[in-house]
Image (cartoon, rainbow, N blue to C red; front, side, top):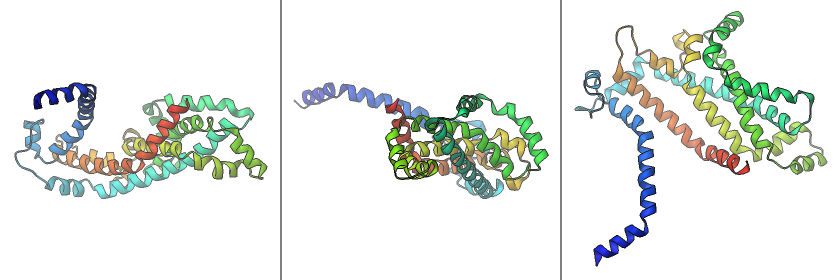
Length: 282
């Protein structure tokens, strides 16, 4: 009797069981690299090289404190946060009014919208040599501004693209009501458009933050002073000419992943809303 009841429940919930199995399988694919990094961060260097996929025979938590001190991760985290936050701030300050004017205002320069979007297709590696010469000419190499301005310039087109797609869906009656009350374009943008565009703004913040936080190529070329090293450069410092401190690299990656995970968890609600709002409106 019990077996028959159990079989009926299984048959009734069969589609849901299949869905759960598929979702767990997909989630495990994405989570496995993070779990592997965490497990490897608790091994010694020899164990990682001898058996990279196995479990640690002895847990070495000292890797984390050693990675923090040798890699100067505290300085690297401060530099990355400082550079990333200022870059994201510049991106929003430039992208919000630009996207608003491109979508809501009629002017002759609207054709510039498409060249700006096309700039997103330029590979970062192509820009390395011109940016190096420009930074040297402006004397901003090995400085915070030497990274902040290139990062902001690289991701402003992305911000304009996301925000303009959201702004164009907003009814014009909102602006017309503000104009009747005597508001200017700038006041309308600040007090009417931006407050109801928080999901799109947070989407730009989350994407730009993630890209800039993990950026390595430009930082490697534009910065040689260890006091300006970002997190990716601090982690690279564990690599020598003839050896690689894998245990410290994995411990440093674990610390960085935890910080990035906390930041994205704070922004994820707004980020998902931004993606969904765009999906439903187009």
